Amino acid sequence: MLEIPLVYVNLFLATLVERVGFDYDSCWSNRGRSFMPDKRMHRGPHPADKKLFAAGAITDLRTALADFSMLLTKGYAEKSALKLVGDRFSLTERQRLAIMRSACSDQQLASRQKREIEVGAVAGRRIAVDGYNILITIEAAMSDAVIFKGRGGCFRDLASIHGTYRKVTETIPAVRLIGQFLQEVGITDCLWLLDSPVSNSGRLKTLIGKLAGENGWNWEIELLISPDAKLIKSDLTVVSSDGVVLDGCKSWVNLARAIIEEKIPDVWLVDMA
Image (cartoon, rainbow, N blue to C red; front, side, top):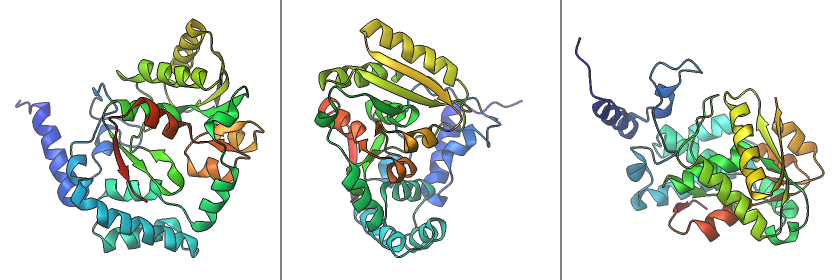
């Protein structure tokens, strides 16, 4: 039986992404039922991202983001608004995902800005960390994946874990970088929340706890079915860039942006706003 080298498979998938908007990530996990082994060791760039988010594409993406945000402001449903804008600009699935994660309505923007707290103002206080949200963004930034600056200044990535978290080369360095940065700004008391339904969350909890113990960080790590619900109800200042959390929490801090701007100067950053 003829075996096709993996490099040609990746090239074929990248071509599909560029030409018809095929979702490359979905081939690695078919709704949780993997049919192609995931051997990726980094949270790095997608094969088509250099073309999809090249300088020549940014003008249309920014216009699309502004149009999508305007429709959200007027009360249009997110799904239908994204399809309308995506079709108008002939965007691929990854470009639409970037638009969706970078946008928000004017009402959301005003509310989020009102409840945002500067990193320095949280020194000495206990914070609640949306674990996968911050960790995957920092992993992506460290592995040269594209990072988007959206409305309100949040930094977001396009990585997806499809129900299973896989440790990558950047995982331990990313946790250490987060911890060292928090220590530098005077935050040592953290509650990390991880999604228990995501496979390998228990292993990640053990890893984070081990690194915290080695460095003397006062971190507590919890596994919850729905961390978002606890983050929204918490009186603690929240670390997240997830829109649902940002719209519901009492206060939040833009930690991913602060870490990337200060500690990862060579990040591939696309300003969408």
